[in-house]
Amino acid sequence: MHRLNWKTSFLTLFTGVLLAQQDVLATTKNPSINLLPSFENRDFNRHIDSTAKKSTIVYLALDGERDSSKKAKSILGDPLVSDSKFVMKLKQTCSTSLDKCIYDQITVDYFSLFQKLTQEKQYTLLKDGSLEVKLVKIKSENEDQKVEVFLSTYLNGVKTDSILIYNYLNIPENSVANEMIYYIDETLRIWQLSVTYEENSISVDSWERFVIDQKTGHINKDTNF
Image (cartoon, rainbow, N blue to C red):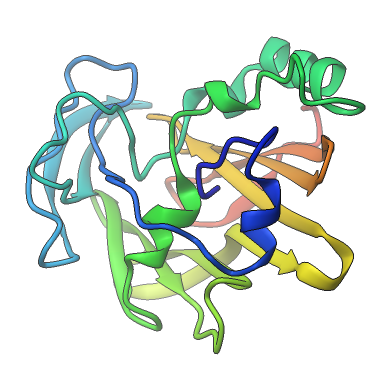
């Protein structure tokens, strides 16, 4: 989400005054992943060769801004989204007050990240043999209030499945905003965390996990999660 101090700057969110920050993309906690500099072309460049389930994944990462080394952010999302202990503590510390809320431990500024993407343009996130995973931002007349990004899978160039991967909805008349953030790991598991921002609280609405089948390209909800 657009990074704001929830205790002092919450109302700024709902006035549509969303200040540009130095939103950059760098590594996840995996020290072997290093993103490339320059955000100017707004495209994905080759990132890393990794392995998942004996398959080679070529990550294609969105370029970061020039001064990107100090702020660790990633198009794959924040690993904290997959951490059950963090999600539980988030519920405990943020649901009634922001005084001890740990939400700011999430380092990826998803809102600013996806504001920089061109609407209705496909961005290849990763490749795994014949499987491609792409992102596309849906057209919105007011990106300060609504942002939607879908993740789609393609097998041998044919689209096989799609899921809403990121969503932001600002409802200024109700002083409420909703956001769904995510994390994708090296085995193509997707965690999604949906939250509601209010003036004095952040509540967890849902926490789910999906798995991309590397053989079929289908995105399946993990019913055992």
